[in-house]
Structure formats: C-alpha cells, structure tokens
Length: 422
Image (tube, helix red, strand yellow):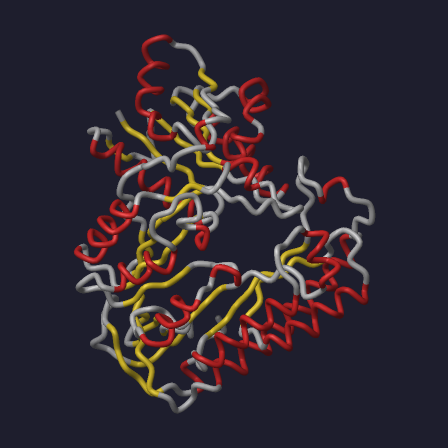
C-alpha cells in the first residue's frame, strides 16, 4: 500500500509526522504523494486560522483522493473530533494520543469498512507516547522531541487542553535518538517539545539541564540548540553550560508575551516583569554575546494603549535581539475568550507593526555588533559559489566560498554585506 502525510503547524507536529512516516516505511508501505492509499493529516489548532487550514486540508484530501483511507490526528482533531467525525467524515479520527496505533486502526477500517473515532481524553494524562526515532531534519539540522503537553494553562492558550499535561520522554530514549542523529551526520540538534523546559517536572529523575549536559557529551555532536524555554526554567546549571560549553548554541528563545504586569496577570503568566528582567540581566552578565529572542502577544483583552506602551518600553529594557509578534487570537474554551474588552483588529495590527519595526532595529543592532569578529558558521545551503548558514547565536550569514558544502563548519570574519535579514 502507498501513503502520504500532510503536516500542519509547529515543529512538534512535524517531528511526530516524521516518526510515523518512519514506522510506515518499516512496515513495508511505500510513500507516494501522487497516488496514496492512505493519507494522514496532522492538524493544528493554535489559532482560528490554523483550525480553518486543518478543515480545508481534510476536505481537500477527501476530494482529490476519494478512495484513500483518510486519517486525521493532532490538536485540531483532539478539540473538534465530534465535528470532524460527523461533518467531514474521514475514515479515522484520533487526537494527540493513540498515534502509535494508527497502523492497527487502518487495518481495522480495511477489514470492517467502518469509520473510527478513537480520540481519547485520558491517555494524554499519564505517560509520554513514544513514537520512535523521527529523523526529522532540515538539511544539516535535526529536531529531537523530549516531552509533550503543558501544565501552565495560560489564559489565552488552548494547547494544555488538547495536548494534555506535561509528560517527559524517557531519558535513555532521548539519548539514544541523539546518538542516532549524530551518527547520521547531522551537525546540529534542536531540542523541541510543547513545553521544553518542563522536562523532568513530572518525575523525580533528570532535570532539563541534566538532559542538556548529557547530550552535550555525545561524541561527534557539533551544536545543540534549545527551541524555546521559560525564564523560570533557566537554572544556574543551564547558564553555566551556556557560558562554558561551546557546543550549546548561544541563543535562547524566552517567551515574554507582555511587558506589563497587569496584562501578565490576566494572561496567567507565572512571573512579573521584575523577575523576568532580573533573569535576563543574569544571563547577559555571564554570556555577553548571547542572542535572546522572544514572543510577544499584542491586543490581549483589555490591553490599553498605556499597557502596550509599557510592553514596548520593557522590551527595550530587556534588550531583546529579535521579536516574534502575534496578534491575540481568541480560542473558544479558554479563559481569555470569555473576557470583556476584546481589542479591535486594526489596533492589533497597529501594535504588531510597531513591534515588528522595533524588532528589525534590534536585530540590525545586534547583528552589526559582530562585524569584524571571527565566527563559526554551519553551512546549510549553497547558492552558486556562496555558502549560507547560521552561527551559534542564530546570525544568518551568506559568504563567498566555492568549496564549502552543507554540513561544513567554516570560521569567517563577519562583514556587513554577509548578514542576512533574519
């Protein structure tokens, strides 16, 4: 039989899709995007737009391949499995668990010719669902999932409801996959998950910084990158590793969401601006060249112009190097969706534009501070005689080198015309 996958949303979804693809191939199935017998759609529900894209993709696959077995999994199907089963009617609906049983469910559909809704609200509450080695890569960079779920319950976020509580992957399984990735020749590993820094919180075993320390010892590993981490989960040990181990990428993505204490409280974030700034200053004092990027939500319910201006000023205080800016998107079922004071779209856009402009200036200042310095670049792609890649601190560089190939690490002296925008 032939199959194809459609993966929507985040890198965690992409990782899970890759792991299942590997299982399908091991099972003897053949990947064929032109004439698939089985189509697996991994959905996303982080915003209303993501919901819409998920619905469109399910309907599109049913229309284009009417005879294929359609399997729908992921966050949107966890949240809306009743609607999907009744209104769109794919063959199999599961959510964010039982994904390891997909091949058995496909056999059940083939044998009984009945549609299945196997969405489960309980199994997500206990153990991490092991899907095996994923081999998800971007040329020379590979992703490694270490946990699933989230316990934070920020008032705007649907993810804890659809992904379940935080569950840590088995420590040895992570190390085994990290070794596998390195032996395959990948130069950089990116640790990913729904709440990466929450690793180990659900048991008395290894902490996140313990995990990082162990992976850094793997022979042949060139670079380890953390996808995202909350400021409260950056402990002294992790800062020490960041400062003293050149294998650990000098880049931290630390979500802020708002620089106003009143807004943070409505968001149910677990820190104050003072606590956040103290941690940022601690990191910068010990790792001076570190690149710190962040997420910011604008237009959260009841966000006034004064509150937005507080956020704008606080971002400058933190001296972030780049911002990922998102207009607030109401998600049905969250506390924030029921709040009064929803901000109108044009004000959200104005605030987004203002922060995006600030982000451009921050990134330009940071990147240009490295002009004249020698930096190691991991080559990711070639464009004629030019090599393109990233430094440990996330600088995106294009330089003339006809001999360099993807996977090479090349030390160069940074010039202004080498720096790409992001």
